[in-house]
Length: 362
Image 1: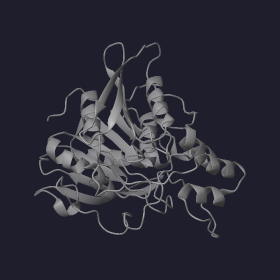
Image 2: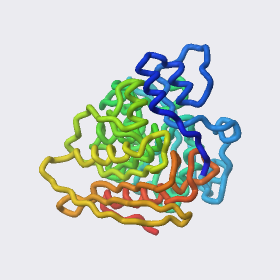
Image 3: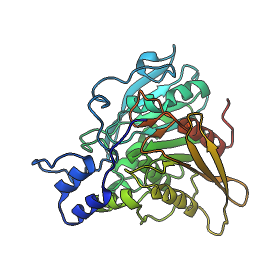
């Protein structure tokens, strides 16, 4: 696992409330204050990478799980495409497995964290490898520096928290474009993300519950937990109360969060789960079951499974003991990964397929 410095979020929040944005960003990023003007829309949910680990330094190395562009199986494609609507445009990468033959398949949307790229995220999560094995499409929307200096999804801005507006509408548009170009199985579109990408996935569940059948939030924040820079710092450091109205449809949600995450407080995982349970019709009484386990890499975890009165699973909450701000079970060739597990990619896929009414094949 890559080690990240502990960030003093309380100090960053205090400085922000005093209007000292430059100093607050210096605390958040671990850098000395710069004299240049600070972009108030930069919220980096991850500490800065070292020069050797920065994804901009080199292309992610291909490895045995076959997620890198240089190690594509024969017949598979990993294409760069562009979508635009009234809210703006975004590039995205689309992985089409070699097994795709025009029959309906699921679609998984993967939302990278701050400073990451689609190639980096594909390498770290191994989702393309799973797509090749199970037969589904994977889309990786790209957040450019022109939208956020650190390539973070703007999860903390009200204009990016509503249906048919901002970044949610662009991501939904990408999904609909793929559904128009390929045969996607109805009711089997899913979204997952890390950090800022996890927060964005939570927003998609609130704004497009008719489009996404289930979501995965790794080390993220509940939708609407922040409305500006100061509240974003507060949410990251201690959790934030959402001002968004719950949707009328429950979107099953799986959460992974490390209890040693000093970038996004573990309380946020609880709040994402609570937001999931607040959706849908009123009057249901969910029940929860606790499971303790140990990953193959030695990580202990507590898994809480919550179901409705009909036995339908609403959520899974994986609290990983001793883990920091990193994708559980990811490959070290990608940034922000914890190879010790458990395997978040595999478990999310299992949860998605079960939410859609069919188990994943081994």
